[in-house]
Length: 459
View 1: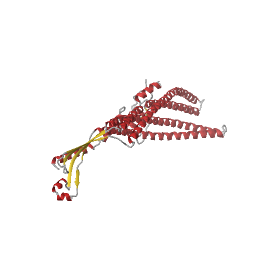
View 2: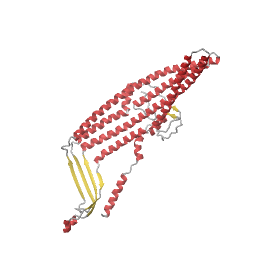
View 3: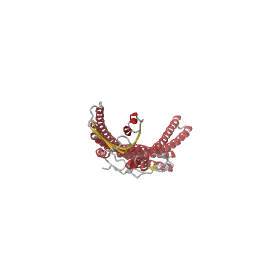
View 4: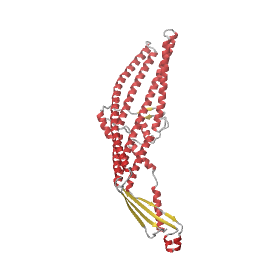
């Protein structure tokens, strides 16, 4: 092998090794840039005892949730498949050194001229290039891969909205369970006080044993509800920690979000959904991809052309004075045993399926918007009634405290009024939670949900 051939072989080897390197951090940034577009990027670090706002929970989930990373990898793989489809238009070049050893033939032993052309050992250093063109199949395949990449990007954004809504619903469920546990704790204290009062009166002969038993049973039932509420808090915090990708959530939940005053209608919200809903956009792209796959399937009936070229850097096999060879081949399908026909039928089925998916997504969006809008409106109406209930509870507590101070009322009356007020305030808080969750659901159902919660549904 000559010196120039060795230099060329080393250069090709270095080129191949350099092409094998993969920058994984840059690969991950491909989808992280999409997820972090509408929020301040979070370091993902969280101290479990710290106070936690809803927006902070969103940022942590956006940074740590594995479901988002999985969807991001799906998007990255779709981009890779797009590049793979385009590579059909590029040549394949390979360095293929060969070594041949064969037994010396008796003919070559008797004839020196033949021995020259049939050596026992031979080394060939060659570079091979090949290109196969099937434009009727490859061009639609590129279009289909591009549409699939756009579909996976839309699904990534949709998965982000789904995860954020799960975080919000779990966050508010924990807050509700904590408020409920506080109210039940006060109710247990009230009923325990009432039970002791009933027992004193029973000993005095002013109440029957049935009244004492009923009060004791009510106390046991309230304690059971308190145990369940405490368990709901622990379970909810565990789920919230999992969604956020942290070890634990032990600090107070401070809210930090309140739904604005809006009066949207279903028509306006549907227009927002048609413009912004990512899974609807994904359904559109699925139709585009399926239509292009159908074209690619039909393209297999058309001819393809292959070109192969070999350049020898050094050559010891016969003929040793030839530096290159080439081959052009045309492939014309005549009989494919029904394989292409089966591919075409499958492509038609996938296209019909894609249209059905789009239709279903549109109907599901309309249903979700209508029902959530009704829930949002009803919760606003109930909140008004809860305000009246809280105001009445505060007034009743004021009268009970005044009566207790003047000696007309009892401490039990005051504790009872406090319990009624706490339950009324819990009911009002629940309705405010319902409004906030319904608003967040409307953001998700219209495609307006972002980690920073800066989008609005005001028409």
